[in-house]
Length: 125
Length: 494
Image 1 (cartoon, each protein chain N blue to C red):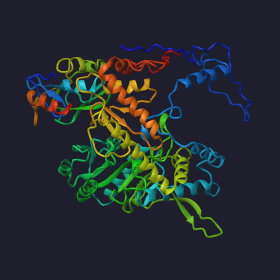
Image 2: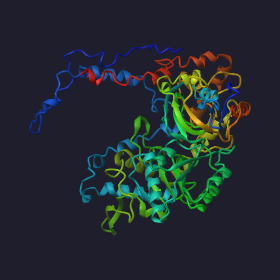
Image 3: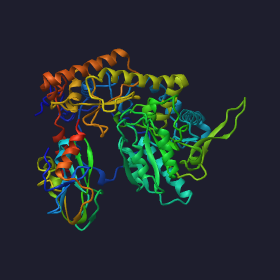
Image 4: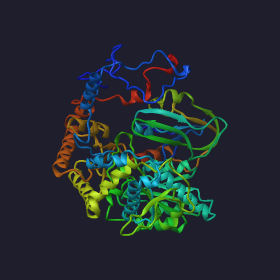
């Protein structure tokens, strides 16, 4: 399982990059969802997102899921290309698969990559 | 990656078309002709042209490719498709039911109204509630109706700050969707290790903003909540209302009445519990039953007795309006022929003892299958189940997934079970045998699943490439979802 050590992670499987303010869906989440076929970002530049509130709706051939903000802050960029190429979330969840960037992002209750790795291991039987 | 090459080719009906062939002779009009406006006329209409016999043969060929519940076993259960007695099809086509109109004067449809009244009474008796509306079109519409009733109740008490609907993570997806339609805030409550509502997490959410809780019991992993009375008490103690999603009522008939254990209201799925056909998009039917303190808020109209009868004369049935009704939920009276007549027939044919048998056989069949599969497939909530259970479709050290197992079942001539639901189980395969299946069928199905588990270890390619014996091989679901082609031509072409 891939969980870069410079990122923070939530229990609902989102990541947050404290240096760039970017957030998205973790590698574990994309592998559980399998082939992602639809992504809709629910927030716009200028919105304020609150950690734990939905920022995107994601559908795979298996399930549909909401992605929640991993940090609280003001949206400064939205990855519009994702809805055109939802498979990016499968191939590059931490890079081109970023969803939203915020400024002044504040995280609460987030895990580091080691803790998140353990958390994921505990869930797959 | 996929082999979707057909072994037998049936052309599309458009391919079979030949200009000038015709299968229709219109009858002479029995009303004066009226011209269509010129703006609606066009010279070219891309409809296929075939003779009647060609159309009949085309659809007969296609129908032979179908897998149907009349032709084989569906472990999808009441959730999607169970075998329903054919007599229901006869009764709902009786001319007296078939040829009536909802706007007829009530004196001319007393039979229909008597049936609706009796069905309301029976559903009250079965569920332990005080009043029932038959209006909602299907389950989710029933949920929305129920949520509106809950809101009307809170409002009538001047209690407007309640905006939080609690819903377990094992719920049907329609529950949060229905509550969301009212603008409520949805709070998800986790399940504990035994598949019950996590009481500690529930208590943490309980305060004076709780609107209510929507609970399916037994839930989607087939577990009867072992603390159901505690859950209901916790919600009531903080002033919320307890809503039962009746989707799985077919496990409880004649055994537990939701109204008796403290639920405030519930929807029934006549199309799941009372043998109304369910596949192909409906029609469903989602009556809602409520306890006495909510009866005044029910949608209008209900069927009631306008004039009492006596030994000589039957009562006069008609429509009545509850005192503080939330209003109409549907243009007419609900799905009469499609839902109510069939459900009435099913309840009449079974009687109280027969309905109890339905639930007991459904639960027995599920437990028998679970017992046979337990040592082969991991059962995450492994205790006595109700009418269904969920196993994991994955094996340690194998890349076989639930989808591969489901597809391989088709090679054994079984319809696959529900997969990837509920979401709280990894690689879920949800198995609901229903009450109608005999031991031979259940054994054959269990044998196939056990054989497939062996194949997963020895010949996994058989699963990855399945199905191989069907008309079409594995469909490319990813391509189907990503490259949407929803129309054979675009309107702007015309």
